[in-house]
Structures are given as structure tokens and as C-alpha cells.
Length: 308
Image (cartoon, rainbow, N blue to C red; front, side):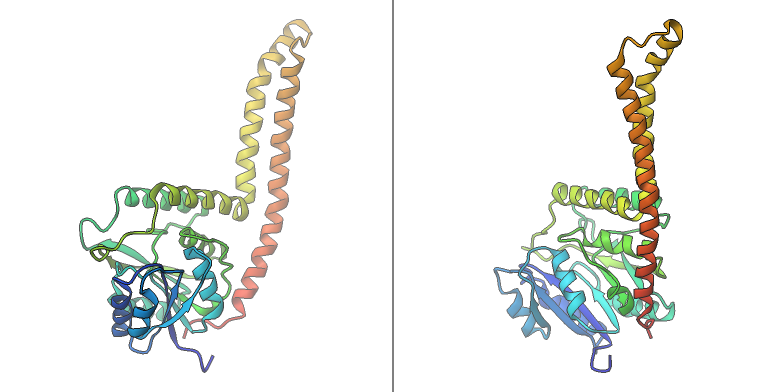
């Protein structure tokens, strides 16, 4: 690690020529010895050229999607402390020294920048409400409360980054980061950071409904993978309950007459109850597999030194 920078910033960019220079300059002003890596994700404007002129190390990831950029950057960049920040100049880079100091003093492995609006229009309509809904859902399912799981501003230790699988392809990468921190139970905390409007003429790459459904789909998948007993127990309970509701009239009629005239209904009810029991059994087996996988993830995480 002697040749690696102490602090490295990863800045995913796609057509951010109006803002990337400001992001690079602000990061270097906040932390003078930082190395800023701008990952150009197939921009069609001068993003890469402007970033290089501002003093960033420019790299390219040709597979579209923020998740693909983060996956590539986390694999390639070597540092003691990693910063992830969007290239749209909406986050307050001056908060970075406090976030790094918090990481070191904890010591923590994950410091989440919780957005605090400095302008009344920083959040797009519906985004704040959707973010609160996702925070509530993930916090209650995984048992760890989070204030801003969709924030793109984070400071992370090397051992967190190098043990993070990074499977997401697009904007749901923030959700995967949050759930990974909860699942591995790394020491983490939150720091309030300023959040402002994008520069004039710059457009958000987020598609409210499309990306919202992708994030919700990822949350469901993560629940299935990280909380299999919970997921399959709920599914099994629903199937068993439907089977019982359908089967009650058949059972009542059998006790009254001794006959089962609606045989297809009886078979359907029995099948649903059996499927419910099978779902619970699958959840129990996968829960054991998940615990073994978490043990492996924990050992991989412990191979790296804590932040100094």
C-alpha cells in the first residue's frame, strides 16, 4: 500500500462537462493530497477532456451504468480511504474532511453523506418521498435505520471496498452498498452534507419511475438473498393462508355430509398449504447457506487493515 494514495475519490461521470471541473477542484481544495479518478461512462461531450484539465486521473468504463463504473473503479483503484461522489456538483465537497476524520476516529468502515437541501429545489419532485419510503423499508427489514440510503456521497475504508461484491449495474448501486454494510454489520455512521441544484443546463440521468422500480426490485432481491428465512416464511405463510381459506368450505362440508364433492378445490387447497410448507423449508435451508456466505464475507473483510 506504500505506493497507493491515502485518499482516492471515484467520480462516475456521463456527460457532466458543465460540472466535473468544479467537482475535481472542490475535492482537491477540501483534501489537497487526494487523487481524483473520474470514470467516463461513454460521454458524448467533453467530460473526459475537462476532467483531465482540472487535474483528475481519467479512466473509462464502456459498459453503461453507474453500478458498472463503481464495480470497475473499486476493483482497479488502490487506496487506504475511498470517496464516492457524483460528478454533477450537487454535493458539498467541503464536508469531505469531516467525513474522513469521522471515518478515522471511529474508526468506521462506511460514512454515509446524508443530504441536507441548501436550496428548495435540489430534490426532484417525488424523489424525497421515494427515498424516505425506501429508507423505511430497508431499515425495518434489515434492522438498521438509515437516513439517506440513495445518497451518492460516501467515504469508505479499504476493507469495506475490497469486500464489496458490486453486482448492480445502474443507479441501484447505492442500495446495494447500504444493504451490504447492514448485512456484514460493519461499523458505520452518518454525516450531514449540503445538497444543491445541478448547474444550469445540466440534466439528471435519473428516471424517476424506471429507476425507482429497479431499486425496489433490487431491494426485494436483496431481501431474498440476505434474509431468506424471512422472505420465504412470508411467502409460505401467504400460500398456506390462501390454501386454508379456500379449503375451509370443503372441510366444513365434509364434516356435515361426509362427502367431498368439490375435489378440485380440495386438491388446490392442499397443494397451496404444501407449497407454503415447502417455501418455509427452502427458507430454512437457504438461511444456513446465507450464514456460511456471511462468514466467508466477514473473513474476507478481516483480511484488510482498518482505516488509519
